[in-house]
Length: 510
Image (cartoon, rainbow, N blue to C red; front, side):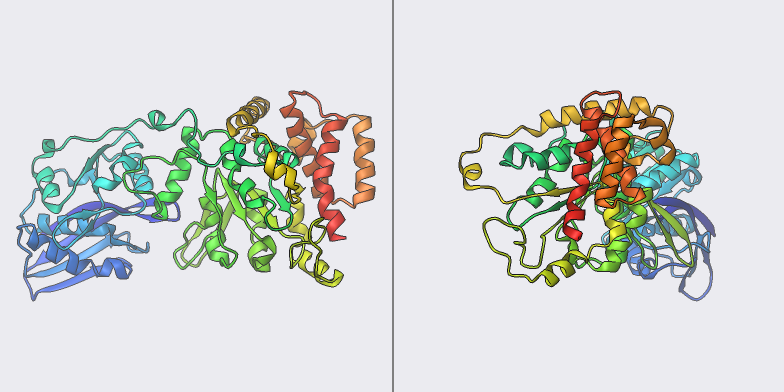
């Protein structure tokens, strides 16, 4: 007898509908599983056999042939355990298959028949809805994640026996519904707050500009000056996630299996801080079956690279495309995939090997050659893609001991949100949401400058040797500073502040 069960697999960050075909014939007992399964899918044989028997059903002692169609798509992971078991029970006549044609089933089986959670349920639910499916059966820990999609009935099933009962009596289970808008907090619950940071007013100002315009930041200073502390607080002043951004971020974490159990949405901006020993594939995504990397997990949030010169040179150079385009293209023989990677890069570094070059409290022990060699680990093209270069000096003892409470993140976030609102009004009808995303056409349209500003920029280009890309980024940062002051035009003070954010790298790298 032949049975069909519907399931799904994840390819990149999207899901593909998979039909599980099960044929049972009277012949020598045998198990054949075809359709490009990986090792985890191949091992489903023993899990399915034990789960069926321990759930009180009979495992047929016949020839069982299972095909995962389409056969030219690589299948991976244990999510096919449950649909395979259902297909075997339907093909052997133990379960009704009346509603299988409109029901998608995913889940890993334990040996006692319990259903365990799997990765990628959110994109699976989106694909099932777009394909016109009426029902989706998922493990209980994945229920909220799937229910936020809407437009499809989501049923939590804790065991194979519950699935059988639901198939035989479709009205025995109640679907779970969830409105994603009700999950979004008015004030994101960040633990780190700028009120904890003493001093460093100019660095806080630079981070406020970065948050308001989506600009990248490089902080340079000696050990203990507060670079990491400041970077970890940047998400707390970013605008709250919209429902669409929350769904995009949750989808990425779902695919990578990083979404906590019983979590419906990620409602705070991501903050990713990979170690400097990270590989190319782990940073931008890849592998034999491509998966998103750290730059994609930081989508709509912050990617923090501490001790930037300690990263391998080739690892840093692969950041060029995502910094410029906001996407990552991963090409493999089997597929070419695209991952979103729109994030704010925050990098920090010491000025030299010992960390005290230019420090007023401790003397640097590095020779000029060593200092220059250390600083030149960061290439010019990568520096050009970082909009703000900020010096973070060591705090004086008076600032550490008697500094008054600083401005809280909520107050700074209010100014940032106001600036972002002006940008959204300006970019109405365009696929842009912050100044950092402007291309040459938008810069020409939205960043007009007068003769006094042109004279200032002309002098900056001559003195600092700025590239064309650096010139464009100065205009973008100037536009953001003008937005923070609610100025419709870019004026000389705005450009002057933007230029001083570019001068540090030229002073040090020359």
